[in-house]
Length: 89
Image (cartoon, rainbow, N blue to C red):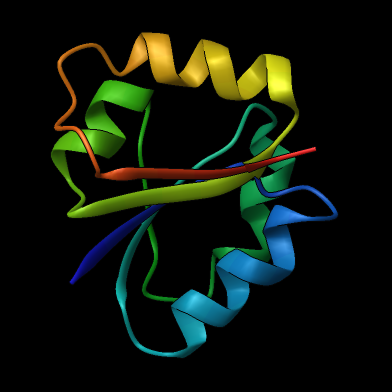
């Protein structure tokens, strides 16, 4: 399974790390480039946009604020229903 993960802050970062360490093919997307630095020594790939992340993933999940979750959902456009799982706070 190819997993996409959006949001690598204090909530999403540890979740994404566990997914990467479990050996899933993972693609990451973060608003701040610095959030991707801890994954430089892993097999995780990075995406330049939510649409790119969606195209590279069977499942997209993440930890984002409620307003960011809505923005991400809208930016995914014609993303298949049931493929997105966000933990909004």
